[in-house]
Length: 373
Image 1 (cartoon, rainbow, N blue to C red):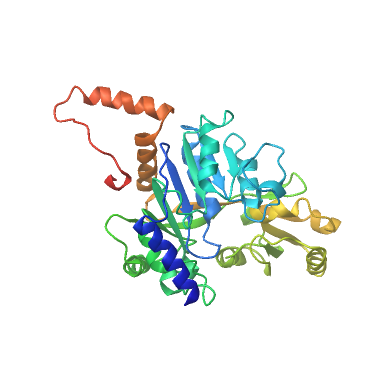
Image 2: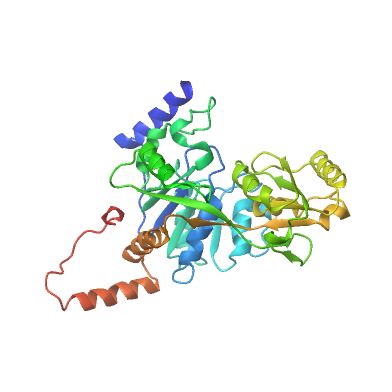
């Protein structure tokens, strides 16, 4: 009750204007949730990066959870994980040509990205985990909801995992139910749609996890997932919600042993000893599978046995839209960015369309907002 009162007062102060939200003259897309971790923010942010990076200059701004630095930090190719956090490190490593920055104060971080000489050509900013950071008013607010922990049946901290009351979902322009089983039935889609009870201006999407080719963390070997049917697998995760990954991998191998740590876990000597011991007693043939986020922290730890290092594989994760919704989602994002870009190639495309439209009657100026789509 006390936590809910504090959060309610804070939200009300924003609604009444006592606390101010800033808008920016650049496309800003927020990806976040109202639960504690585990909704798939990183793979969904990476989907947006892939969608936009060949057309506009993309910047990702994150808080940099558990980093050891302070203030604003712009990631470079050699920036250590400890300075920016595991998820920004992962994104910079996978997409070296985009800007990745961290700043607890998102408004100041956006000011740096749009004004600093090194990054002032930024066309669009993706805010990672910023649904509660209301000092920024994004152009598109994307709320992620874990299929395995639906907000409609959860409770506020500390009794549950909600950061704020589920009614906060009303601020979202797009709601995505993530980590859905691939065999979700039509009736379940309808039930979830009714249960979420969204407003007409909100769009609901469903995504599932798609896995890439396994690759060795300390080597060059790669392995297809359909080639591990004889393997005894130690699934090593330090993420908030590994349930769907466990369910997906279990039928693919001979045996699956989950070894689960807390989200963003900082691996200590006793953890490394436990990993070594559990892997040692696994029967042959065997391997360890971990996530990209965990790999960012494991690649610098000391004490992993040679046997572990020689059998440690990383499983890339992407998301896939269900119900043939991908084209609609992409259109919403690209249309918003095109309408609001400052200095990208999309501005030229927009001006070209305007020039073409000027030859037709009935085309006058109008105000554009995301909810027009």
